[in-house]
Image (cartoon, rainbow, N blue to C red; front, side):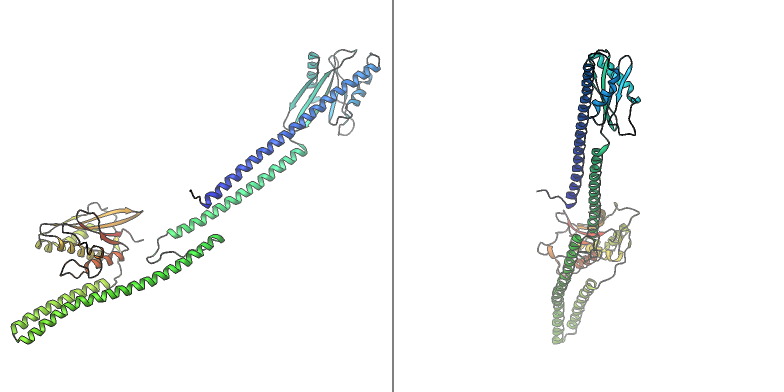
Length: 487
């Protein structure tokens, strides 16, 4: 099942809000258009009714006069016909003489309106001419931005030919109470929707920014030993509760790590003490035995031989203690840009005599390194680590074998690393000690102290790097992985 983030769901809500607002506005516009259409239709019906009323009044007037002309009373007939039609004006038109009568009884201006509207006079004349041609009622609509002009002409039957009746009204479409309500409703919808969209957008922006700051704080490089950073409050109550929970968890984790580190150090001290006792006991026992035998025999030659053996065992203990001090004494790092190729050449040159005696060849490969950009490392300590790895490889390589010392600049997970490799064609690491080969006093040689590789590991850790055996390699290969620059 796909899980969507809160940000995505809020964004979807924002889009739905805008879509629903657009749909509502469209429906409101449709309702408004429908209501204006009804108004226009109603006004059209009223204009048609007024035209027929003028026709009926004229017919009654002709009957009243016994079929003779009735020009003198035409204005009164039109006035009476339009008296009950609010907003409608009209009159009687002659094809020969133009307007014979005009009335607008419901005119809302000052005084009585008796003059024919000049702006529509040509339209009225054309309408009445068309009525005479077709000899039946004709309707005309002339829409504009704020209103629709409605006209209707009707033929008049009587003793005088060429007469027509006309009526005219106006239906307001973008004006009046309906239009005001529509604009007010649309404005209210726009304000509420845009306000809601703006608020939701502001909330999304702020929420996303706070989440981004938390992500950046959690992803930022941290000093060794710090699992979770101390997060600052965001100002968002829900997120602040999460921040407080993470800070509390980080505190508990640091305390647990401190306790675990203390327990691990105590355990390591115990193992180291047992190993030191074991390693020193054997030389002391040998020296004691030699001394006792020399004292009992009384032979000066045997005493000299015993003293030489005692000196040899003392040298062994001294070497053990020196390596042990090198392992346990913490030395500060002095990082500097270091050219790696000369460093490898120097380490190989220091071991040339030993390699020559054991008939082992040494090759150095560092051609792929950049000429201008050098890694920031402690040259002396890295040289010491390479000496231990190189000496270990030479001691395990049979005559005629080969030891290779190489370096490469690699990029892993967006960070640049320095890879130093020491490979040999020896028999490899015994499977019984492969998992613990970097632990103190673990060695595959009877005369080894088991501290050389442990020193290499400590130097790698001091650089915030690592050392390990390369799995599935064709040769026994140790890889020293160091950061190109300190984080």
